[in-house]
Image 1: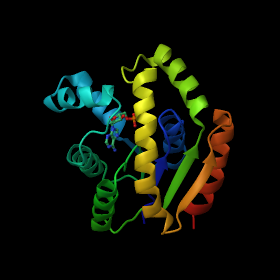
Image 2: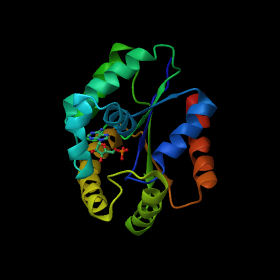
Image 3: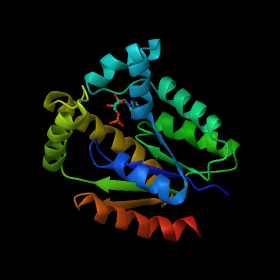
Length: 193
Ligand code: AMP
């Protein structure tokens, strides 16, 4: 049986950082739609060109594009013990499509870990990340849109999983290693049960 988890949270909540740590520790494959889109931009593909403008404005790219990328990457990793979905799903349609894709593999979403971080801390982190990584959507202007988008899509996606009783809130304001410990406490329990 595979184990599949969603890392949910606002931009700069630490989803990617934590997903990479958990990938190494539990052998779950991280699938980040943001990373996949940035790779397309770096390769200069049509898809990348199409996505860049939307991403720079802080808006969501189409369901069709991100669902297609997730489907491809799941196919490419048939031996994974399971997946960490990072930044996906962000709409109800994406959540539905993910459920269908997993069901075809006799699997499901087992857990949604919601990293909670307040807006002021997120804006501070974005300013720092802009200097460190040079991401073109890490501007204060784009970040405001991304946070508004987050509020709207979390209200759309979280209830979908809350009714299944699989959402667990994590305090993302703590230092990185303390957040890791909180995540491990939950994952270690669930992954073996
Ligand atoms: P992220 O790295 O997860 O913060 O994503 C960066 C940007 O990529 C987002 O602001 C969106 O423009 C786009 N993006 C990433 N994942 C998705 C998704 N699941 N649905 C729609 N757009 C996405």
